[in-house]
Every structure is written in structure tokens, then in C-alpha cells.
Amino acid sequence: VLSTRDNVQEVTRKNFEETGDIWIDPLDDGSIVPHYSAKGKGAQYALKYLDDIGDLKLTCLALPFMYSNFLGFFCPLPNEGRTQWVLSASLGEGKVDMMGSADLAAIVPNIFANSDKYDGEIIRLVGERLTIDEVAGAFADLFGKDVIYNPLTPAEVAALPFAAAPAMAQMCQFLGDPRSLQHDLEVSKEVAFPKQLQRFEDWLLTHSDSTAFTQVGLDVDAPDIESVTVFGATSSEGVSVVKGLLADTRKSYRIRATTRHLDSEKAKALQKLDPSRIDLVYADFDDIDSCRAALAGEFSQGVFLATDFYEDAAQDMEAE
Image (cartoon, rainbow, N blue to C red; front, side, top):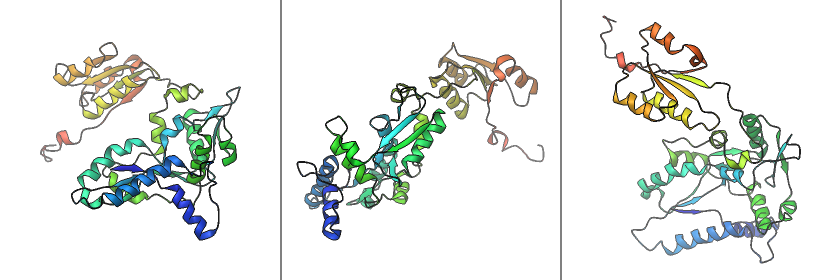
């Protein structure tokens, strides 16, 4: 699996030959989006010169704009009074192909498992297509802040005070232009199956406590709930919820974990996750009073439970 992007220099050259339109002005050294074009040339070289090696199977992944870019150069920045955050980029007004790097954890093994099917292919991956206005809206919805998109021109990006700014401007111009080769959403879904491709709003929620965001004043307000009762805490769902509450960096939750078997190994293992924050209590859905007792005091602030159909599914329905 060779990760690459299109040879943009070649793409724009063909466009000029066909239309006479200079799509992206070359840099001083004549290159166009050098970090994309170099990878594209590498893929072309590999496909050409390794084709004669019979046992070798080669698949190229063309990656789109990655969500993780919003943790760096494309992070929304605040004004002086931190009353508005601005996402500045030269990505145009149309939709941009994007994806999360976490999807590669499913995609790459699937390609290895189906090497014959994808041999010699260039798979143009994409998880979601969004405008940058939609991205700004997702930031605003999650953080409760005024986040807007400020569309820059390529010249404005190229003039920014860092060495790679001109190449960055070319990249933005290429990604934001409808002439760039669109990635294939259906093939991306196929090669990721059974995992679903990560949506941007899910990625953003997962990374909401990232240092890149907190440093610029983008914080998710901590919920008012501080104490939670988790019914059926030793089930797979219950354990996942308890671990999620323990891992939440916004607040130190107190957790009342219910089980019908206080002395079970599962119950003991659960409490060992954090004995100072997890209290084990008895509760049985067939014993309403035990459920009321589990919710006594502050532990009615938040409640999680999952019903279990299968436990009694084998019982004689006549007797039931």
C-alpha cells in the first residue's frame, strides 16, 4: 500500500494543454504543489517499474484533505476579545473531499486481505464532502462559539509569513477547485466495510479537548451532571460507559455501578478501574425497590441503562 496524492503538476499541465488555462501558477522552481506531485511521481514510478515483479501487488491510496489539518494550520483562531473565531483558508466555496486518519486502521488491513481485488488500483479515499462553511458550523455547534469561514485568495495564503506558505496556497487552490480529481465515496465505503467512515462532526467531538483547540479558547462546557448511575454496569455496554465517564477530561464523575452479583469477577474488575470514583451497589430490574435505592441522592442526576432481551429469550413463552 503506497499512500499518495495526485501528481498535481501533471494534472495542471494536461489542463493547460487541453484548455490553455493556467490553473495553478508554478513556484519559482517550476513546481506545483511539490509535496503532492512528488508523491504522485513516486506512485507512477512504482506502478510502472514494479509491474514486472509477478508476486508483488501494489495499491495506491490517494488521500484527501485530512480532518487532522484542523488541529494545525487550519485551526480556527480568535479575535482579540475572543468573541469570534475565524477559520481562514483558500479552499473556495464548494465541497472539499475529507477524511479521518482513523479510517486507515480498517482500510489498510482490508486491502491486504483482498490484495488481488485491489492490485494495481489507485483508490481515491474520502470520508465526507463538506464546504468549509459547514466545517465552521460544526465548530460553532459543538463549542457554542461564533465560528466563521474567512475565504482567502491563494495570493493571501502565499503571502503568509512562513516558508511553506506558497506551496500551501497551491495545495488549497487545488483542493478547493472542482477540477481536482474527485474522490470515490462508494469505493471508500466498500474498502472500509464493515467499519463506517468517520464523519467530521464525530471526529471533532472526539478531539474536542485537544490542546490545539483549548489553547485558542475553544472549550466544550462541562455538563452539569457530576454523578451517574450505570445500570447493568458489568455488561459490555455498561463497562464501555463507565470507561468513557472515567476518561472524560472535562469532569471527574462519581459513578454508581449496579450489578446483581456484587462478588463477581466482572464487578471486582470494574471497580478496580478507579475505586475512588466507582461505587458498586446491588440492583435488579425485577426488584423495583433496589432500582430506586440505586438512584437515591445525587445519583439520579444522570442514568444509563441497557435492557437485555436475550437473557430471558429462551424461557418458555407459555410460562412467561
